[in-house]
Length: 185
Image (cartoon, rainbow, N blue to C red):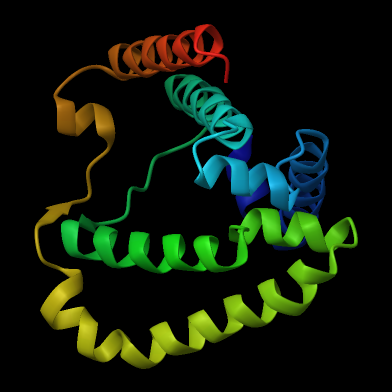
């Protein structure tokens, strides 16, 4: 079923556009495109964004592994390394701390008419991409591959079944949500 879809690039692009619009809609409905909500998350005062992202992660895990079990999709993990994770985290975190939006919430905020996201977010993402691509030749051999852990999924890394990994992640999320609720967040 999905192999036929994979061969039809226009349909893929159309589905991507529809999914992107839905993603932006749900980000906006969850208030994750509001600067004050994201700032509250960065200041550890409002955990709305974390709740949305953790819920999306567990739903995505369940969906992908269910489709994988049914033979509908194949996983193609990318190679990872501690160096690339640290560099990416620093770039992502710096941009989010400066502007108050991540790339997804920036586009959602632009869609809802937030001028700060339009005037700061889009040029900031473009500048970041240009700077990173300029530094990539220097970073690629010296830093990005440090601590290479290869093409591995979380269940492979933990040496557990996908069901155990998903169950553990789900229990961790429920625990975090419970702690946030009883502590007033």
